[in-house]
Length: 113
Image (tube, rainbow, N blue to C red; front, side, top):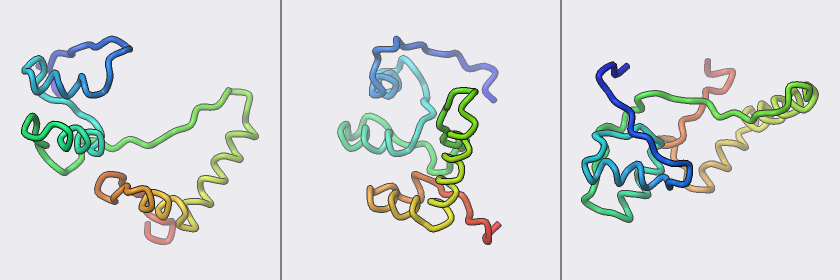
């Protein structure tokens, strides 16, 4: 999407804040990341950064890796997650822990699609 962009690499030991500090110090121009992480950084470091947009650039699904031969485990997890989604538990849990709908987008219920 950004053919003229260059990548700034960090070591595996670098904390997440280092990504945002690279932007605030001019070592990088922009960081694409989760809104909640940026919001926390901005609260701790007011005036250093600003969010460019509230509209997500890209949305990624969460996933849980399992061993290739764990077909039954994978199916059980899929079934449990679908049940939690369908009965509203995931939405309730996210809201109880302060995860707003703006920061953690929800997938539509099957009857809403």
